[in-house]
Amino acid sequence: MNDEAIDYAGVFQALPGMVALLTPDLLFADANEEFLRAAGRTREQVLGRYLFDVFPDNPNDPGASGMRNLAASLTRVVTTGERDTMALQRYDVERPDRPGEWEERYWSPVNAPVFGPDGRVVLVVHRVEEVTELIRARGRPGGGRARVLEAELYTRARELQEVNERLRQAHAREREVALVLQKAMLTAHRHVGHHRAAVRYRPAVGALNVCGDWYDLVDLVGGNRFGVAVGDVVGHGLEAAGVMGQLRSALSAASRVAAGPAEALSVLGRYAHVVDGAESATAVTTFIDCDRRTITYSSAGHPPPVLVHPDGRTEFLDQATDPPLDARPDPAPRPEAGTTYDEGATLVLYTDGLVERRSEDIDTGLARLADSLARHREEDPESLADAVLLELLPPGGATDDTALVIVRL
Image 1: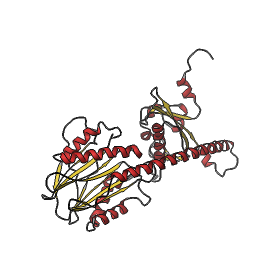
Image 2: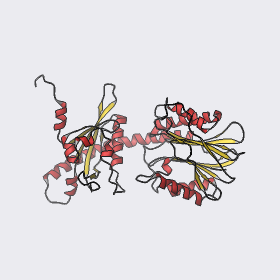
Image 3: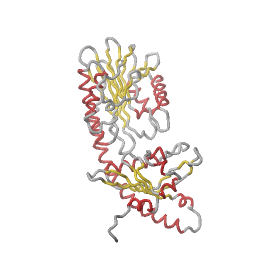
Image 4: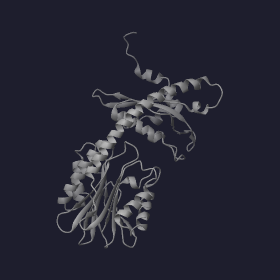
């Protein structure tokens, strides 16, 4: 070995197998020649671009899960700093020479962290081996390469089984603690002022996606008034539950002294700037004056509340929308709007887990919510809440947690 420095860039390009380097934000930092060749992409088509913009899921396959699974694996590597070996994945690839035409492909991915001087993950090594031919060779006689690949897959499967078991145990413990914390903070409200209210929280299916959503109902100072708010923290587990608790408490306190919902959200936005984990958090709050029968509201990047009038007409309160809580560096006031209601109307606040679905426009989910609320409007808040959740949440449970507040005015 001479004293010349090793050309690691050259080594990287010469590596056997498909290897790419991704930033923690999942942008391509580099890709070796084998990766580009097998993926059918040029270097210019990938470098600097978001992974899932280059390789989205097959839109023609409603059951496609490759993108979701890969994103979860890469996020685990960035978050934990640990290598993650994935199970065999089907991940179709669009033919670059024939846009709109997708090829069925199968892959065996391994993702590993690269640490910077401060110990943080600065890159992710995404190594993937295509096993499409192995899958297609099932049942065919002979095939030495297929046997070699099968042996490697078996070894990886054993490693994956051990890793997944440790992850399941850790996630189960975290989920249990987070749900206890969530339950302690989000107490049930049967009444607010003299009005009946129903609240629901439904955790997402799976150990990771839990405890980012919250709600609050608070009596306001001065007159026959109260406030209703919901919010959503990006993230999962105990960290998201902790951030959720801070934002909920801060908005509850701000609402008691603020002149209106816009001022309350402005205060909360300034507070969110100094809370780690509050990035891109959303919230919407409403102030209800029962004597004047008015609702004033303001939204920070959150889906609009729904006012269901006694005659069945639904009104989305979407005239005071603004960016998420921490997305405004300037101190300019947030927008605020108002509307009136008649006795017997119903106010509904919710989080996006109730209306958003993968590969579906959110307007479709909002229309589905409005229809359900109108049809069940004469039911009491508790029954109405149950009916809405039954009709809007998937039978097997949602992949995002859901909060729902219903108040009969």
